[in-house]
Each structure stands twice: as structure tokens, then as C-alpha cells.
Length: 406
Image 1 (cartoon, one colour):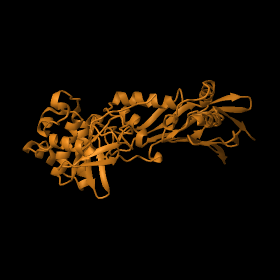
Image 2 (cartoon, one colour):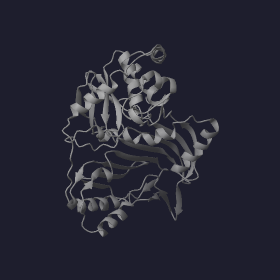
Image 3 (cartoon, rainbow, N blue to C red):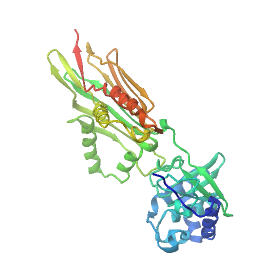
Image 4 (cartoon, one colour):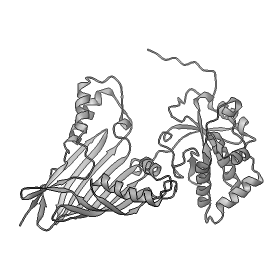
């Protein structure tokens, strides 16, 4: 089958000129806006600090409401109206922010894009766009901000927008085609560390730390986006400890404000009273408290059963361009030795997985790390994907024998 697209002779410059005309008289300040801006930036030490405050205010304190009736589907409301009603759609919020940024002496512009990406650059059309963000000119280039994404820190974009096409509209109606920046794979990281001591009766006491960055931070930010009272905090102590070790108790809980875009997404707490081993004759059996990737073996078998693949493989849908890592550092009782499984390394065009098992003195270390990728691979590489999943699945280590040596 063939797809034939017919379009009028139009360019991206035409689209930019059209939108520039609609928005030309929208960037208007008022005494109320000036007063709000002055309050926001009071005490800010740098221009960057002021920019962060204005970004957070517009992103979080103005309710996002989609408006697409009549001309309102294309032309932004005046910033004064947005300030008064405390709501707006993407173009309203972007226009409010741009107006404030310009008032601060910055060059800021609207940017048209498709919220789901996938714009065909050789088919210019205003209908290709359904979203708007802002661009601020900085010494190193543009700083792009999606004012509808209330949990995205300044300097980044939601993952669906990264690497996609955008059209910057300048005040004179000139259009500038851009490709949005993409966060590097190491920046998109989810890391947990469990460090502690094991008593002779198999009880763990230690500390758990979970940190997330890039596109891996949003789950943590959403979880802690609302204020947590004393009762909820006590419940969380019990819940989070049980997620690591069933029956454990938690204490010294350290949280962060998910809506504080300058705060590192991090959760930490002390774990105690966790029975993590069971007796087996003269040995103990340790339940490994890290995510197990052995289940991917079943996925490999399922893919094999589907037969030859007809369509390209979306590499990002396999593991994604991010890093998952988890580590256990456990101090064993004197004289205890772990029967260590073999280390595993599985590498392919779809990602890299490593599992390491070692004992240094009385410290047992277990580390698992998955690094995903993105891209598109031809259907005939399905065999490589299956082989990689099988190699990963070899690390199906759920228990480790701890031998008591005299």
C-alpha cells in the first residue's frame, strides 16, 4: 500500500508568520503582573534564580485547562486574564511566561510543536501543531520550557518532546526550525543502594537510599507532590520498609518535596528488624532484596513463539534510554562466606546488563545494572534481541547460600 499526502504549497515560514500575527499584541504587561513579578523575584540573587522562580510559578500555580473553541484554539489569552483566572492552556501559560521573561530583560519566544512528536518536516502545516512551549535565549543557546509540565525541572523537557521538531516564532513573524535537546542516557537514572549489617540470627539493620534523575524522576515526584502530614509519615515509614523487606520496620525517613523543582528526587530511611535469611542445616539462605531480571526469559520464549517478525523494532520500547541500578552491601557475621553465583554480562544493540557478586572480607556486594538504548532496528534483528533477553535471564538469582565457617 502507498500513502499519498496532498497539501497546499505552504512553508514553515508561512506558519510562523500566521501565528506571529495572532500573538503579536498578546505580550502585554499590567501593574498587577509587574507586582506579581516583583514579589516572585524579591530576594533572588541571580537572573537564573529569578528565572527558576517564574518558571515554577507559571508551571505549578496556574491550572492547566485545554481551550480550543473558536479563535481561542489558536490565539492565546492576554496574560492579565490568565493572572486573574489562574488557569490557561499551553499557549496561555507560555505567553504569560514569555511576557514575564521579557519584562526581566530576557529574549523569550513561543515555540510550536506536536505534543506526541512525529511531525513530518517536509509537510509544513499549522495543523501539525497541537502544543506550545517557551524558548529563552541564553548565552549557550535556547532554554526550552514546557509550562504545562509542572514537575519538569528548568533545563529539561518531558521525554515525549525530546529530540522532536519545533518552530520558534520570533516577534517579527520569522520562523526558526529547531530540534529539541535530548537528555543523555546516564542522566535518566534510577538508583537504589541498600547498606547494612546481618546479625547471626539473620536480621538485617541498615539504610536504604533511592535516587532518580531525568525521565526516571517523575514517579518519585508524583508520589511526594502533596504535603505529607505526621500520620501519613508514620504510615510511610512502615510501608517503604516493607517494600524492601516484608515485616521490616522503618525509621529516620528522609523525603523531598516533589513540587520543589530544585530538590533532588531522593528517599532514604533506616531499616531494622528485617528477617532476611532462613536456616538450612549449617547454613543460612539469604533472600536477595534487589529487582530480579530473570523473568525476561519468559519474554524471550514468547518472542520465539511468534515466528519471523515483519515490522521494525523500537529499541526504546525494550528497555529505554535510561539506567537502572541497584546495589546491596551487606556486612556478614564473622566467619560467614557466601556461595557466590557467577557474574553476568549481556550486551547487544538493545542494551547492556551486568550483575556482579563478590565478597571482600565480611562484606557481601551484589550489584545489578541495566542500561537501555533507543533507535529503530530492522525486523531481522529479532534473533539478537531474543538472545540478549536469554543472556539477561541467566541472572535469575533470588537466593544466596551463606555458609558458616569456623
